[in-house]
Length: 90
Image (cartoon, rainbow, N blue to C red; front, side):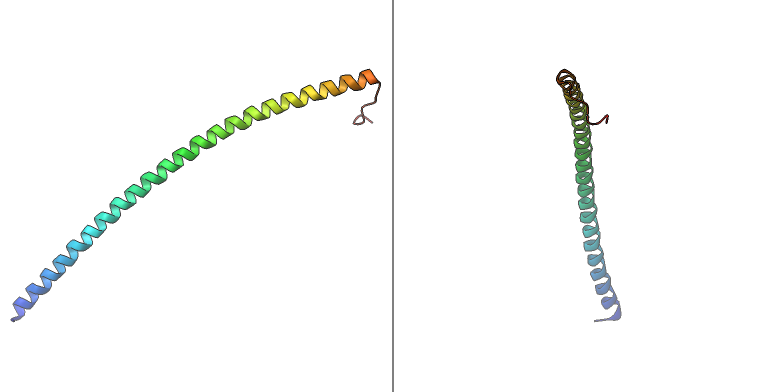
């Protein structure tokens, strides 16, 4: 085998290796793109969940505030009717 034939053989092997690497890079790019899309989808879902939880918290906070106010007024009326002093004022 001549030097030229050896060089051609090595170039063919390098070409095949290069093609294989290019295919691997393409596969990696596709996988990264799919992962990025998945992460973006998860992030959007989390944002929606946070928004919903924030609205529920505000709703519960408002209802809790109303209940506490009602109970405070009721307690005050009962204390006044019974003639009991308010322990927080003394």
